[in-house]
Length: 213
Image 1: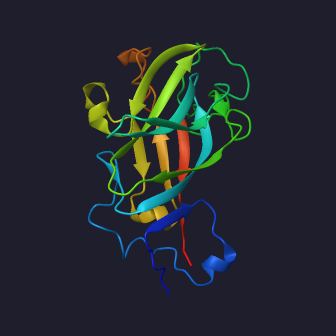
Image 2 (image 1 turned 180 degrees about the vertical axis):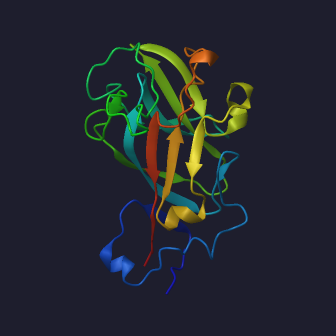
């Protein structure tokens, strides 16, 4: 049985057992509307849509805030806020490269984790129907602003891609989407030092469509 979406839908990070028993989790695939978009070009939903976001980890010397910007009004809503750049103090001279020499994840790469770097790692935001949005990542280093990056490529200097969407609109209700930011496009980082690792701020988005009753 598939959900009737009604006038509003909620996409959460965790499945509710009673809901899971009667709802298929791939329900976004069938009723996806022509105007539903979730990618580097546009974020827009035909229905009012509440989506949960979960901070997973950060890797880098910057202290960042992830949020949503309404492209019609310019209003920014911060969602996931780092209170420190990493779980433990490290030298800013260390480059962020995500992997060590053996190709494994580097635990010393200014790693920030839920509950430490980001005290409130799970939040929700309601996207209003037929309203264009973008995600943003605003960063600082030792209190000094170093730039704002956007999920829509054309909003970044040079039209650079600064976020990688691992998944699409359909995946929001079928396991979720990963948002992987690369913050080396910020003003402080010279082009010859950019690592382009897309690990600097990683967020899990959605996963399960909650059926309204």
